[in-house]
Image (cartoon, rainbow, N blue to C red; front, side, top):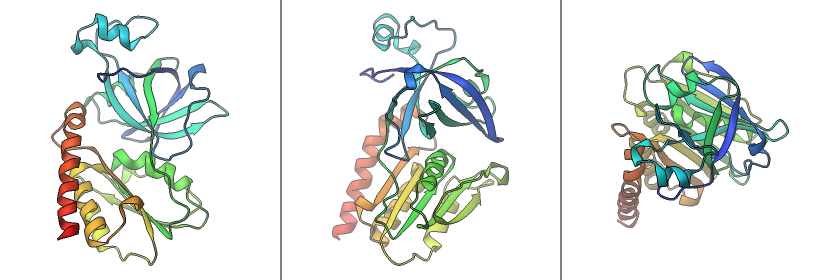
Amino acid sequence: MTDRPKKVTTAHVVRTERPTPHVIRLVLGGDELVGLPVGEYTDHYVKLLFPQPGVTYPEPFDPAVIRRDLPREQWPRLRAYTVRAWDPAAVELTIDVVHHGDEGVAGPWAAALRPGDPVRFTGPGGAYAPSPAADWHLLVGDESALPAIAASLERLPAGAPARVFVEVAGPEDEQPLPGPGAVELVWLHRGTRPVGDSLVEAVRALEFPPGAVHAFVHGEATFVKELRRLLRIERGVPREMLSISGYWRRGFDDEGWRSSKPDWNRQVEVEEAAELTA
């Protein structure tokens, strides 16, 4: 949990699915989800709370009480996840969690969930949705950005041109990405290459269509930084037509990246401003 505890919503697992071998899809429901403010954006996210093993938390679950009564190392851990889908009629919230066996925090936790289990989160937040005023759309990301890309494609205006590049480990990780736009989708298989290398190559080689582009680029911070420079400096995409952020960074756990991300972003902005004014 962060220093300022936010309102916590408690949902319950309705069912889990496996759309690909490395993704666990959580479908959540419950009375506390009624009226959840999801729908304005296609990159809505929530911050899931993962209980620490062996720790019993007070009921009702109260972040303020946990912070007051338990040492910091026993507080639940937070991880941000994009909302894959929201069905207000059925009151069902869908979240995809990447799963690589026993690796990490979220994957093993999600694999152990069963119908009826509680899932707690804060949020939602969000800031992006495809602009109907754009002449065409560019969406780029790795696995961490796939839920937002999928949700965005479903919200494209009918017939809107879109170039989409998604990098995953291998062909088994591809999944259907339907939508009403005129989409050219390219799946890139990482294999043993560093995350994002193939995405940078693909966007650099892309022949940009004429007109104003609205771009969404998210994923590992290193390749995102390279593509930000390409789009802002080399291609001259206005800042207001670009949604771009590092969801994670190689060599950092989630807490480490969240604490260092503001400094990283400031440095990127300083470098960008220097190049734009050179």
